[in-house]
Image (tube, rainbow, N blue to C red; front, side, top):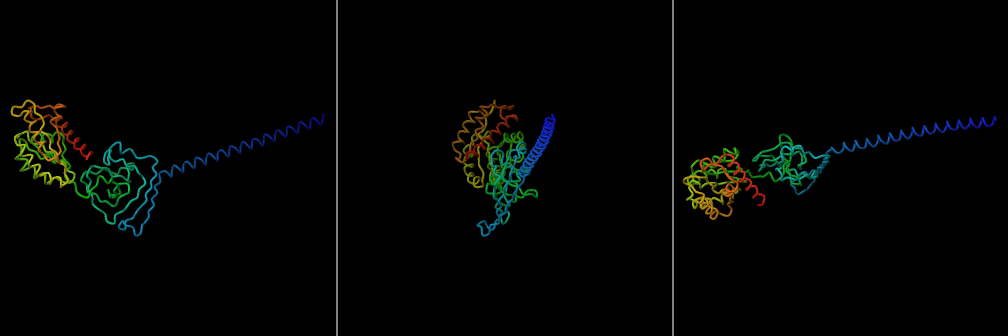
Length: 342
């Protein structure tokens, strides 16, 4: 009986020891798991912090053929591209600029250059559309250019900062007035309807060839420049002068193109019930103009556009604002389409 009692006591002590060892093992496992979890979280935090860091390595190339220019290798890791500016103003310019490269080299000019913007365009903090927009410049803004990147951007000075503009939208030659409209009373009324004050409107009520040759042409010569678009719209007051318009425009076309302009003749548009002018006469004038003008003069067929889309006129000759706005939009869309296919 005494032996049996001693055996039971030993068994109880053995079981208690096992429980202690098991408890210690579980505690150690919890400690190890906790330490491992903390390490993973720490690694993730470090990785996230690194994603916002810009690393700039500057390498000086001695004896390079770039007239002592400095070349910088710029690498930027972007965790999420900046898109807020795209929502309010799509430029660089507007939809054309799809460059998103964040790896580029900068060639800094030994002497800064002066360039001009040929469109309204964004200035960005880096050479790509995913970089922050620093601001917007208007057409014909003079910019100080510091250098250029190998992915198609100019480095510029902008409001005491360094910015970037896509090369397509800066040029060394100062651009002329973007749009030059020359015409009669219909052009006068279109200018009021569309309210484009930055364009040049050379127009006078009741005028025709005499005004065009003596006053409009000299003014066009004064305002025309690189990138200008000239839109001429005369004839409704003197449909018998088609040959004179053809001869003068063909004589001037070389001068205007040499200045960097593109030239369009806008067809005389239709009339309603007007006592002295018929659409038959207008169609004959338009046919003669289109046949006789130099092939480098573009043709804007506003006549067909309004006949197909409708127009509103109070006196049979002049239109309401909505018609002028529609006709203006047709003109600029046709010019834009021609630029795309050129």
